[in-house]
Length: 252
Image (tube, rainbow, N blue to C red; front, side, top):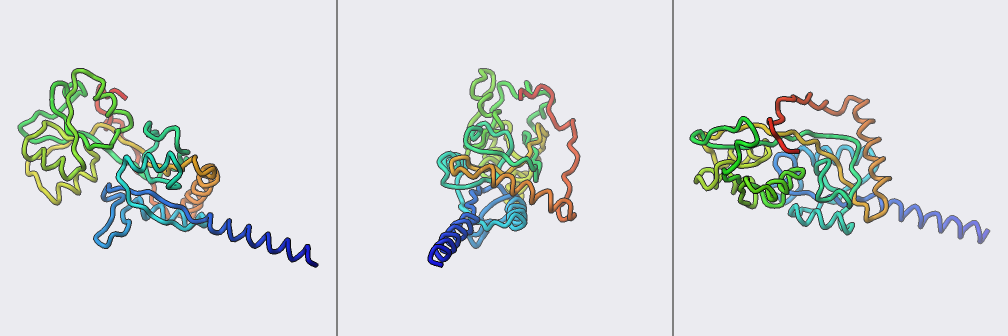
């Protein structure tokens, strides 16, 4: 009887530890309308809601932590957060995470310019022009390419809002920016003659920190939950990719 009670006690402790392990810490950044901190200081956005929906289906509870992008990379590396709502094939965290096989979103980026600056038809049209970039974004390796290529010039700024202000003041020829976040920034600070040329489409993913040792289990749970929700018809299908969105001469 004593051994039986001891076994039950150990089992209960194990179950409690497992239940506590069902809480995942999610890093999120300012990337409206996909993820951002709202007026009440709470996580919000399309990707945040998808993450909540899939986590609930998978049986996990979430705790969100608002971070700058560079800190997210470090926290994934050391296991201070369990996952991030990021992009697939991100070279900055390639050795630190397991990507979900699910692809919940697609996000387009390109260059934004004013009407007195010619719109690029080929990637090489950006040569010798000043390109405004968002500091901390690697654009799937494009940032490194621009840094290492001698014929391309760029300057950094902290976010899409300040990028719009720089463009408005002609402090650069083009902004390299994601479509929806730039549109959100332009709502706050309109530029009447701004134009947009698409460059590439990136696929979003859930990125699970390897450091904690449970990344494979978390990824499988999220992928299974995503598939279950899709079979129930509770997810919006992703739009079909348009090949013309890839700019001619794009180096990646």
